[in-house]
Length: 244
Image (tube, rainbow, N blue to C red; front, side, top):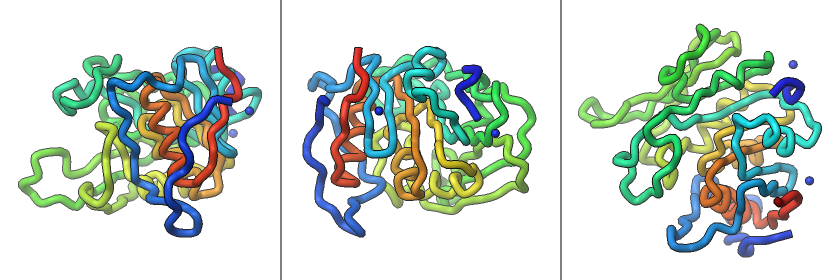
């Protein structure tokens, strides 16, 4: 990924109903039926307004170069898969990372502000700070009551409080948009890279914050989710700007 970091037709449905200021529900995630063939294909690069999304592999330098198209990234905010196992969501289609965690250490090759959720699951250098999400759950809550993010941003430990039941969730590790907007307050710069796109929450947070998101997602089905989610939220129309 050297040189990528720094201190562009096809279509989906029409946008959904607008609610506040021309936008829909920021945490609403469309459901894509398993039996429906994905619109997105491996190698596609889609333009979503000022954002870009690629159906590709963030560990492949050539894919990242196509996504970035000569631009420089100012910061990274991401939530890599960490071997959650198919049993964590029995209705979800099995993914490559279900039993083997991703290795996000390649993201640290360049010195840009970086926030990695689930950082405690990975072999990363000592953090300069920690960001913690308090899910505001009772003591008898059977899952994690909080999550932490690794960061190279020099900051005292910070905590964000939001109930895990206050937003809709389709992706197994989906984060609320409000949490990711909070992260963007610490990760400065115009262009935000999320190399593990999931359901696209970082892109929606960037939309709200007036930032430009460059997002990679390996699964064509989840690329469809990201695109449909952005279209439903903004009323905009995605364009296929580079396909193979």
